[in-house]
Image 1 (cartoon, rainbow, N blue to C red):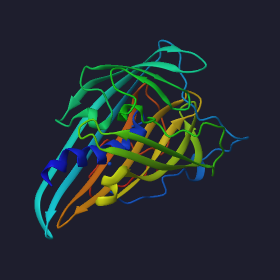
Image 2 (cartoon, rainbow, N blue to C red):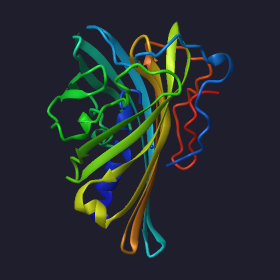
Image 3 (spheres, rainbow, N blue to C red):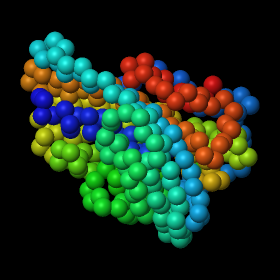
Image 4 (cartoon, one colour):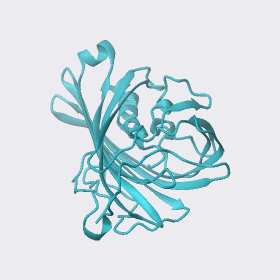
Length: 294
């Protein structure tokens, strides 16, 4: 079972790549959506798409924590806790109707977690990317198209949507650390539209799971659950906040492993005032609420 630890940690944290530039244990939910005076009306379907112009720069701050437990014959044999806090700057270096060109750099890091397992560049690494407004990744520096860096960083609908609309995302990749083929499947719901600085933000609820492709997936008992909320700035076309939780259990024979993880992210530059936003940049993997708004 020891040889599977690298894969397991990768599988659990990589699920949150879909919130890469917005920002893993299940926790209390909460509605996550806007209520009362926070919600604003829409005049029709909205385009939720990435936008940018050359020279634009945004900085996100993230916190990620995980708890990994190994069990054998019903007994806990190993427990490991990890956490990391880091900042990521995204610079738009070019823009066409077809795609955006980004330079993504991790500028600060406190913790020993491998950020590649979270689909982020390591400290001081500059990752050049090309990405469509829909979130489809066309280029990710030196990383192959089968890597996690090509999982769409944000689950966007690819068409105009209105509050209440639902869309899905499914993507296959191969773990760079283990070579194991994985698949993430997500369902996103446009919960509401809220005031967000001088513009508006879409509150998006996400849920889904990650699975193992191929014959290995048939041999292992593997369960996964993802849930959380994202805030996407409609006018600027960028993610501004996220809270995501993930739970995974794998059993083979009389041994098993349980992973609880959480990730929170928020934009820090440029500053953005979001009424009711829960700004705390901490999370407990075993007692985590994915609620974004009060």
